[in-house]
Image 1 (cartoon, each protein chain N blue to C red):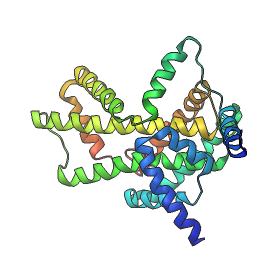
Image 2 (cartoon, each protein chain N blue to C red):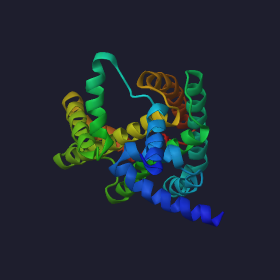
Image 3 (cartoon, chains in turn red, green):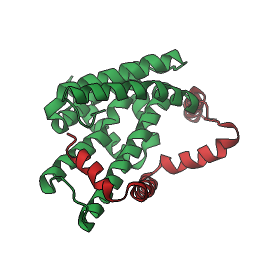
Length: 76
Length: 185
């Protein structure tokens, strides 16, 4: 192994052991699946989740969401 | 000093794109190699978007960083204050985008919103936009604690469980004082 490759390996190894992988017992695969989606270009998932949240809010409070938006628009 | 400022400006631009496209990898780089000079550019963005309450926004930033740092260290965090300060500084991006957009919409489509079809549709779109930015903010906040303090998920939730109620009370106080309506956190 050349010195340069070895140095790269050591740098990578130090990075890995500096922050141990996250484990959550039986939920670890689920966590890893969610984390993988958010690591690169997470916007489609953010938007889809937001649409679901807002539809849920609309189902619960109906057209009263306009009151919330009025408050937020006056919020600065 | 000028050299550092220019280098930090380039890093800031690169990180700005990275926060959108590859937040995980970008945050790792910010915490590992970021310079405190990058905070100058973040401060400039905050000054533009929150010019009416820039001092309060700065004070809130210091409060959050100190709180996160103290609580994080009490429960076993191992990072640096520089990392937390930089990481939390970059979480201002969603906040700045939201305040910019809301300011523009206040001029273009001033409130109040009505319960007409157009009013409800606009409200829905505005809320989708706001919640999307909230998710982005939460992700960046999580990455700040994960890389800045090297905490696991359980400890991150503990930090959030302590810091969020304190910030809630702080936001109410600021609201009562007439400084923030929506907190600039």
